[in-house]
Each structure stands twice: as C-alpha cells, then as structure tokens.
Image (cartoon, rainbow, N blue to C red; front, side, top):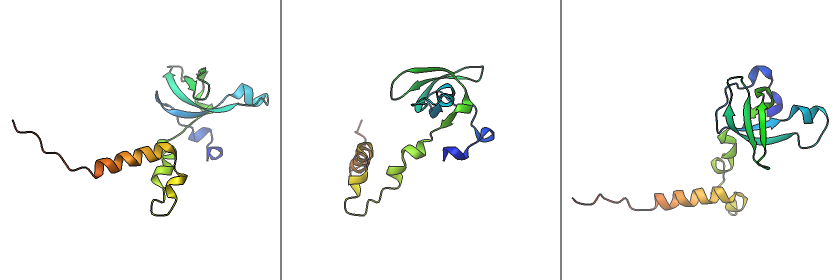
Length: 120
C-alpha cells in the first residue's frame, strides 16, 4: 500500500492529531534498524515541516518533512470492525478488545428503550 505512493501523491498539509507512518531518512539511508514507525502529528510549522510524537516510545521527532510521512487513515484502523463476520461461530475471537468494547456499547444502546422526557 505505502510502496505505491510517490512524491506526486504525498499528502501535504497534514493536520494536528493525524496519525502517520514516518520513515527517518538518516536512519534508513545508514541502514540502521527501527527507521520506520507510527507517529502522531503534534505541530505543523509554516516551513512545511512537522513535529511528531512516536507512539511506541513517546519520543519527539522535530522538523519531519512530509515526503517521509504517509497518512494512516482511520478506515484502516477500523477495518476489523467494519469487516467482522459477525454471523459465524467464533467470529468474536478474531476481533480486538477495542472492537468488542465498541460493539458491546452499540448493542447496549440499540437494545435500550427510548426514554421519554420528564414532565415539567
């Protein structure tokens, strides 16, 4: 998926709070490990660079260039919920805990009788 993107398809203007896959070019070109990781955008600068927080370590990446970032869209994070085969035995076993929690909340809301407003 990410390999198919090139410089002409890189999204510019990422927003604060977006989740991105970041590749540290200095680590990558030196052949060092751990050069690609998931980050959250903290600050967008007028220079076109970004400050990121690495999710796994909490460390800050300063002045990250957008050419080395790829947006991680919410649809990818939510795919297991959207495509869960809920009509088969054992389907819940393959779902994440977050997906199960969300579905449980939705079921509780759907099965509750609507409440009438109190009389004044």
